[in-house]
Image (cartoon, rainbow, N blue to C red; front, side):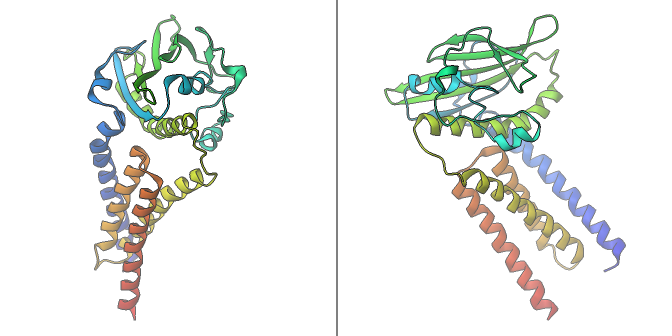
Length: 289
């Protein structure tokens, strides 16, 4: 196949994948913005709500509010961390270290205390602190008006189960909708991991040191299948199967990235993609022979 044709097929395939990625994100977006939350939780008022509610997410924790609260009040850089992907946050110099135990020295949080993103950047301060129920902090603009609110809510289900709700809301005059949409993409990745980590900590479940590496490998495996299948598509003008496999890989990447499925399900999805890729590879080898 002429080089020019291969290049055209590559970029045509890439354009199709980008279209699938955009359309797929539009479909999946309502789910990750309200991940785990009931309609009642999405519509309920929470302390500090601003004019634009960006997202409301929730998770059920097998613990009472007073068992979850200590993990929340030590939130923040230089304190208990963000309970998310420390390695990713530290790539940007945030110096985050997520605690695996309750730290007594950070249990005396007060209204007005800063919540820092890095050692030199503390844009938010605690505005609401009602033990075992509400914890909220806000960032202010130069006039002292709130432009962003982050709120945790704890709602008991029964004596041993609690709903942990997290909401972020914004001032549209300071954060235009396009900026909020750009923020929601990395926020979904970090926040869903945080909710699961807090759940595990409060329930006393020890997470394996292999969990995060396996999550990374699962994501990278889907990406590698996507890219290698695209290259195969560009070099085999008589077969559309590699392009279909690339499209399937994009769908898997969207699911893994924004819906935080169980690790075992991510591995199953990846094995399915790899099996399909192996089948195609054998088919190409047989044809060549």
